[in-house]
Picture 1 (cartoon, rainbow, N blue to C red):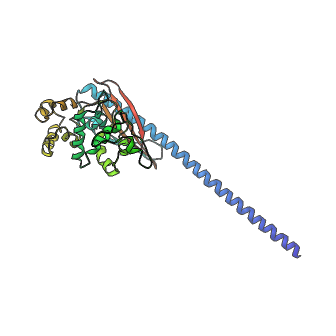
Picture 2 (picture 1 turned 180 degrees about the vertical axis):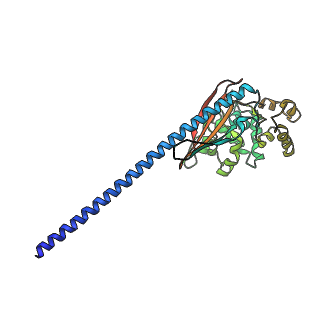
Length: 313
């Protein structure tokens, strides 16, 4: 009788163990299945978000093209300069929306202008960049460091330059780019550049593939002031008020008495070719932040996307 009881006890324990293992396995399979479903859903929403962002880009290209046909100048009162309204994304029962804005990149200082078409340092542009840094309360030494970062040689500028011998001594070591930069985020690698300084500088700079002029109709107040050492805050406030309605009526006449260096007239214009779109698509819990740089041909020509990026400028 005791043997029978012992056998029944073993059988009961075995049955309980099998039940526990089966339940654990079923729970694991259910969890893995839920993760797979969620992962697939996120991927589908992300892909849909990308398609919505590309659709927004196509829409903006048409707006910029039409604007180039209708107007020979670009200013902050035009349709492209307004915030994109929050547009709903139709995704059945899931809520979604797309928002964004367009920035005129020629309203910023193009750091690639520091080196001219012959590979030489443009002294006038260097001095302007130094003024911009000082206006923002940053170390003007960053101007020389940037010039050395993008010039073609390994000769450190004096007294503010730095080349490979400096950067290879860092931990981890790295080298200067020695060519035009593609993304302004590369300036975060400059000697002494911290995040706070870079964040302060970022809204006022661009890295464009060609030498470009500054559009005075859209330039940031700091960039406007950097055009000449004699420009002060009150003068810039007057300029901002003058251009507010629809840009400067005659920017050449306006700046003819303000710019003491005639060479700076070659650095300004009242129209633009380079724009940046930022589109933010939110579908359920999935968020897609999309950037693209758009190049518009003169005279209302086609608008081409030259750079795309996700999550960063």
